[in-house]
Amino acid sequence: MSTKYELTGEPNEHGLRRIRALRSFGTVTVGDTGGLIAGEQNLNQFGEAWVFDEAQVFGEARVFGKAQVFGEARVFGEAQVFGEARVFGEARVFGKAWVFGKAQVSGKAWVSGKAWVFGKAQVFGKAWVSGKAWVCKAQIS
Image (tube, rainbow, N blue to C red; front, side, top):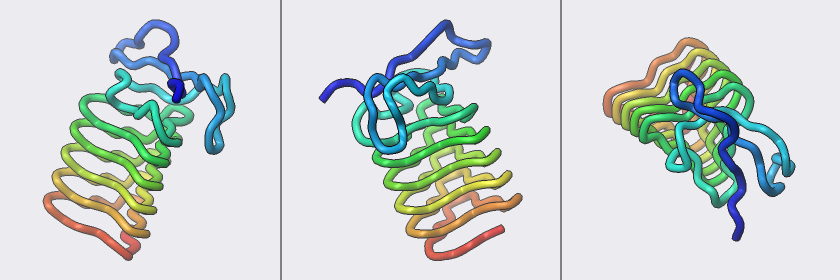
C-alpha cells in the first residue's frame, strides 16, 4: 500500500510541518492539507487516522487506526490516540495517556499521565483526567 501523506514546506518555529494527503481514504481526499506533525512517527501511514485543521501531534505521540485529531487539539509526549477515537477543540492529550476505542476528548479537556479514556467515554468542557485513571462508558465535564 502506498503512503497516504507527505510532509510539506519548511518546519515552523516548533519544528512541525503540515501534512498533505497523497491518496483518498475515509473523509480525506487526495490533495487535502491537514494539521501539523513533527514527523512520520506521529501519524501512521496506514489506516485512516488523520490530523486536521490546526491540530498538532509531536514528541513521541502517535495517532493511528481510524483516529482523528482536529480543531486546535494537541497530542504530545508519549500519548497515543487510536481506534476510532477523536480529540478536538482545544483538548490536550499528553504524558503517556491513551485515548482509544470510540472515546472523545474535546473542548478544553486535558488527559494526561498514564490515564486511559476508552470505550465510548467522553471527556469535555474543562475536565481533567490524569494519573492512572481509567474512564470508560462515562461522560466527564
